[in-house]
Length: 477
Ligand code: SF4
Image (cartoon, rainbow, N blue to C red; front, side):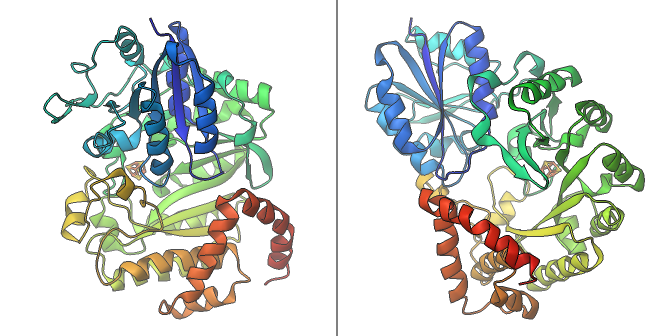
């Protein structure tokens, strides 16, 4: 029986985010006697890691997949594994949303849909006996006549307390984030899913409106581990919707005794709730504000109003809590006037909010089986047929093909550069004048930015430039 399993997440850039998905699976496999090897990093190091492993005992290699640029190195890594005649399984959000596309890769033997921790032991046992997963719930594969067969079931584990991430199997120091005054912040995912049905969100496609969370005790157990082992000075609750059960989330917060950061819906921020945030060392809130157009807000089914966002900003104004609002432009059928309403709303919030308020403008990304998907297709979305095509998926790229496509992409970038690099005066001028034509400057800044964030040398230069950028900001440039 082959008892070794390699679980991997391949990245295309240098910044790393704790791979909770494979850590949960690793914990469960280890409990059941498997020798689990974890890999999280770039393609080059993956090859080295794989070469070191004894293939005689290797049961399978599982890759965690996300739709976007990380797919390219994941395909190369999978091909490399397959060339040694080892079984390859793809899981994660991309495999769940686009299983047919994933199975077009000759190197992928199976896809697993949804959350596999409750089934991973069975999957490993079946493969260890060199049997097939064809009848297994939540699995997709290519049949004997080359037909793609996908299970109707998306796995969703409800008994999550049994499946904690094996945090001890990974060195978490490379994952420290600097957030506001804290320098050793680590993320935590205490729940998954969300009962809301925002038209653009992957949650409906993957979780069908379900939500499940670890019990308070288990969350605190994980936080205590991070405090003890890593001396964290902040924790970032990165759940889909941490405040789905407000009482549960508040109980957790009251017990952690740490600066904390979390995403939340705007309508949660009553005056009383803001007082709770202040009393419990909340340092920053992330709010999906989405749009400045009341019509679009209704259309995307967010379940809040534009005024809820405005009220949240007003109520946070007298606190010292940093606030980040994310907006989306380029929704199906969104008119130029509605986009301008969003830009105007951002300017309005910047005027009325405190100086710790930041807005971000992202581009709408259509995903299959989400509520807005059909309308995205009607609006010129041409779904890529390959994983290579889906690798271009990003929050800066517009997949709807219409006369606004290029402008939408430029608006998002110009706003970002204006906010984070205020000395780029041309971008500020562009935003204020709403002038988004002839954007050669944006192309150049884009290239430099990519170099500074995606190459080792560039990241080093960026680190050295940080004090200078800080000084320029301070001097009002
Ligand atoms: S955008 Fe947020 S609130 Fe809306 S469905 Fe997704 S996770 Fe839930």
